[in-house]
Image (cartoon, rainbow, N blue to C red; front, side, top):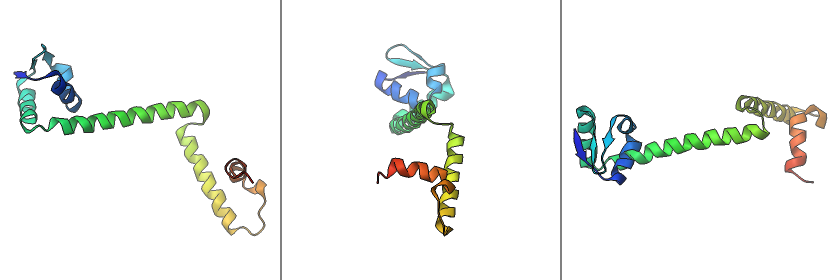
Length: 122
Protein backbone atom coordinates (compact mmCIF):
# COMPACT_ATOMS: atom_id res chain seq x y z
CA UNK A 1 0.00 0.00 0.00
CA UNK A 2 1.35 3.44 -0.97
CA UNK A 3 0.73 6.38 1.34
CA UNK A 4 1.54 10.03 0.61
CA UNK A 5 3.45 11.40 3.60
CA UNK A 6 5.97 14.15 4.37
CA UNK A 7 9.41 13.42 5.78
CA UNK A 8 8.45 15.17 9.03
CA UNK A 9 5.32 13.07 9.45
CA UNK A 10 7.22 9.93 8.50
CA UNK A 11 9.81 10.66 11.19
CA UNK A 12 7.11 11.00 13.85
CA UNK A 13 5.32 7.94 12.52
CA UNK A 14 8.50 5.86 12.65
CA UNK A 15 8.95 6.80 16.31
CA UNK A 16 5.36 5.83 17.07
CA UNK A 17 5.43 2.66 14.97
CA UNK A 18 9.00 1.30 14.71
CA UNK A 19 7.89 -1.44 12.30
CA UNK A 20 7.44 1.31 9.67
CA UNK A 21 11.22 1.68 9.52
CA UNK A 22 11.66 -2.09 9.34
CA UNK A 23 9.24 -2.86 6.48
CA UNK A 24 8.49 0.47 4.82
CA UNK A 25 10.10 1.91 1.71
CA UNK A 26 10.06 5.68 1.30
CA UNK A 27 10.70 7.39 -2.04
CA UNK A 28 10.69 10.98 -0.80
CA UNK A 29 6.93 11.52 -1.02
CA UNK A 30 5.27 8.12 -0.58
CA UNK A 31 5.67 5.33 1.92
CA UNK A 32 5.06 1.79 0.77
CA UNK A 33 4.10 -0.71 3.47
CA UNK A 34 2.13 -3.95 3.75
CA UNK A 35 -1.64 -3.39 3.52
CA UNK A 36 -2.52 -4.10 7.16
CA UNK A 37 0.14 -1.66 8.40
CA UNK A 38 -0.94 0.84 5.75
CA UNK A 39 -4.50 0.77 7.03
CA UNK A 40 -3.29 1.44 10.56
CA UNK A 41 -1.08 4.28 9.32
CA UNK A 42 -3.95 5.84 7.38
CA UNK A 43 -6.10 5.69 10.52
CA UNK A 44 -3.37 7.39 12.56
CA UNK A 45 -2.78 10.03 9.88
CA UNK A 46 -6.49 10.76 9.50
CA UNK A 47 -6.88 11.38 13.23
CA UNK A 48 -3.51 13.10 13.55
CA UNK A 49 -2.84 10.70 16.45
CA UNK A 50 0.69 9.65 15.61
CA UNK A 51 2.32 12.79 17.00
CA UNK A 52 1.20 11.94 20.53
CA UNK A 53 2.29 8.34 20.07
CA UNK A 54 5.62 9.49 18.68
CA UNK A 55 6.20 11.82 21.60
CA UNK A 56 5.43 9.05 24.07
CA UNK A 57 7.72 6.60 22.27
CA UNK A 58 10.49 9.19 22.07
CA UNK A 59 10.10 10.03 25.76
CA UNK A 60 10.43 6.36 26.73
CA UNK A 61 13.43 5.89 24.45
CA UNK A 62 15.17 8.97 25.85
CA UNK A 63 14.44 7.96 29.45
CA UNK A 64 16.00 4.57 28.71
CA UNK A 65 19.06 6.23 27.20
CA UNK A 66 19.44 8.54 30.19
CA UNK A 67 19.06 5.62 32.61
CA UNK A 68 21.70 3.61 30.75
CA UNK A 69 24.10 6.54 30.48
CA UNK A 70 23.62 7.36 34.15
CA UNK A 71 24.32 3.81 35.22
CA UNK A 72 27.40 3.64 32.98
CA UNK A 73 28.75 6.91 34.40
CA UNK A 74 27.93 5.89 37.95
CA UNK A 75 29.77 2.60 37.53
CA UNK A 76 32.97 4.52 36.84
CA UNK A 77 32.90 5.90 40.36
CA UNK A 78 30.49 3.84 42.42
CA UNK A 79 29.43 0.24 42.81
CA UNK A 80 26.79 -1.64 40.84
CA UNK A 81 23.16 -0.66 41.33
CA UNK A 82 22.25 -3.69 43.43
CA UNK A 83 25.28 -3.09 45.66
CA UNK A 84 24.19 0.54 46.03
CA UNK A 85 20.76 -0.71 47.13
CA UNK A 86 22.45 -2.89 49.75
CA UNK A 87 24.33 0.19 50.98
CA UNK A 88 21.06 2.07 51.35
CA UNK A 89 19.62 -0.85 53.29
CA UNK A 90 22.64 -0.74 55.61
CA UNK A 91 22.14 3.00 56.10
CA UNK A 92 18.54 2.42 57.10
CA UNK A 93 19.58 -0.31 59.54
CA UNK A 94 22.23 1.97 61.08
CA UNK A 95 19.78 4.87 61.34
CA UNK A 96 17.19 2.67 63.03
CA UNK A 97 19.78 1.34 65.49
CA UNK A 98 21.00 4.89 66.19
CA UNK A 99 17.47 6.06 67.02
CA UNK A 100 17.05 3.48 69.78
CA UNK A 101 20.63 3.48 71.09
CA UNK A 102 21.49 5.07 74.42
CA UNK A 103 25.29 5.13 74.18
CA UNK A 104 26.16 5.97 70.57
CA UNK A 105 29.66 5.65 69.20
CA UNK A 106 30.61 6.60 65.61
CA UNK A 107 32.35 3.25 65.14
CA UNK A 108 28.99 1.52 65.63
CA UNK A 109 27.60 3.34 62.56
CA UNK A 110 30.39 3.26 59.94
CA UNK A 111 28.33 4.24 56.91
CA UNK A 112 26.44 7.04 58.62
CA UNK A 113 29.63 8.28 60.31
CA UNK A 114 31.53 8.40 57.03
CA UNK A 115 28.79 10.44 55.38
CA UNK A 116 28.36 12.84 58.26
CA UNK A 117 31.78 14.37 57.68
CA UNK A 118 31.07 14.79 53.96
CA UNK A 119 27.54 16.17 54.17
CA UNK A 120 27.74 18.20 57.38
CA UNK A 121 30.92 20.24 57.73
CA UNK A 122 30.91 21.05 61.39
